Image (cartoon, rainbow, N blue to C red):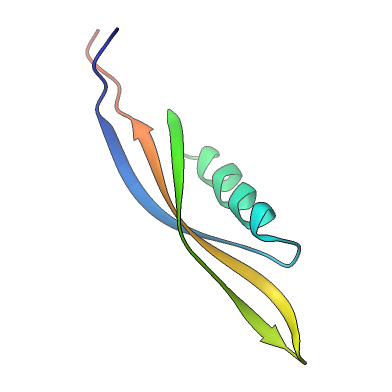
Length: 71
């Protein structure tokens, strides 16, 4: 088994549908420009209220990217 080193970044995903959708949106967007995404951790959940209802969800994430080795 190889030893791996990870870089960790923080993102906030948002969605008008759900917290799960906010997480998926953040990961899908990050995967468009970043490689080797391996794991995520939800660090916070919050939202915006409008007219007494949830207008959208915001989910804070830490995402781990495996650094590439020299071979």
